[in-house]
Length: 341
Image (tube, rainbow, N blue to C red; front, side, top):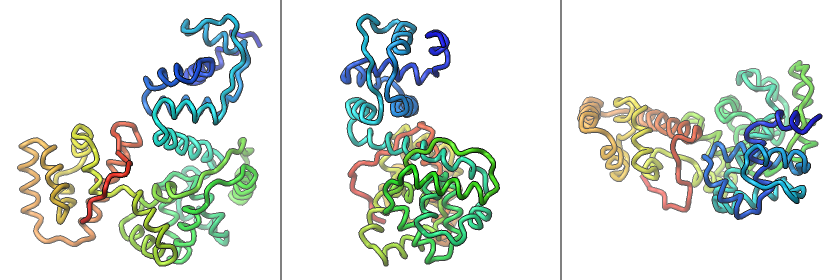
């Protein structure tokens, strides 16, 4: 294949990755900082997958972008270490870890793409009789919405077993992922050949993502059961979960974007009994007209059940998470002291 043909097959993210691999880390980091978080994720994925780029492909990419000289170019290395180093130099170690975790989960999830769209009832049947560790491995690969529905369908003891297994699983070997994926494909009657396997990622965050998309009752029961077994683990899960009061951690522009998508009646319910700091932040970030509507809704609501309040708050949390996942807002996840209701 000619160099031009090889270059034509590269995507935009791949071309950027190739060029970054030809630069020293400091210069590459300066370039990386110019990309959005979504773009950085895509480029990092290509850096991890490429590992090495032959000099012909590198020189062709460099020539196309007219940014770097091609004389005396030597083959540069990509791979995970390069990607991690570049991300840390660009965004700091904490954000770099978050990008790599999202990337690992995204890449690992491809092993179970054949389960996309399968309803929770069929998944429960498919996983019936499997060990908690096997169920955990599968749920950690699924989209959190899909995984939370499966988790809710398990009985209380099984649910806690699986949740604990997800949180403590760590990583799984490509061989283990491949065996489980292939077994489920055969059982599900799938005929598509399995794709190349990559490491699967477990740990606290996949469980947090699942719980943040579960209904309030499932979340509460599961955390209580997990606390009875492993209080330290349960506390760590709680500390990383997004809650309604986390809205105070957003900047004003992001809060306004979240609130624009929330019905006044739902927001009024969510504010019932909320900490004063939360209600002040919300009131400060709506227009005067909407503030009046909100006050009217609060007065009209009267006494309400706690379950209604929890569901309303869950709606706000879902909106925050969806906007954060789209990159439209940024949720601070540092060591801020949590508000106590």
